[in-house]
Length: 111
Image 1: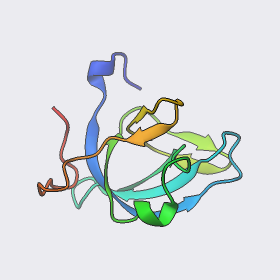
Image 2 (image 1 turned 30 degrees about the vertical axis):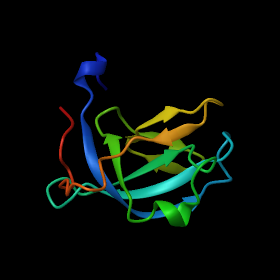
Image 3 (image 1 turned 135 degrees about the horizontal axis):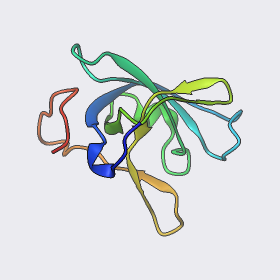
Image 4 (image 1 turned 45 degrees about the vertical axis):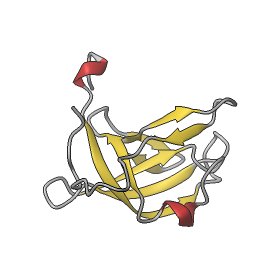
């Protein structure tokens, strides 16, 4: 766990697979399987993304992930990272992602 928000490690990942997660207590959850590239491997993340995104639209998309916050189990699913988003006007998450016009390497760290 990190002690300060400045200790969070945020890396670029690519969504390999996504599916709705109705078993979770929060509504509109999505299971994500994300690669951080060869050097950092694959992780899983659960995020409340079904408000704005169909799971099939997420596959192949680059996202930012906080990777050193610890692991939690949500309805039996191991979530190893926080997929970074910001709230819309109704407080539903909207993804924060790298510019699509620039080739950003997987596993790259936010600075």
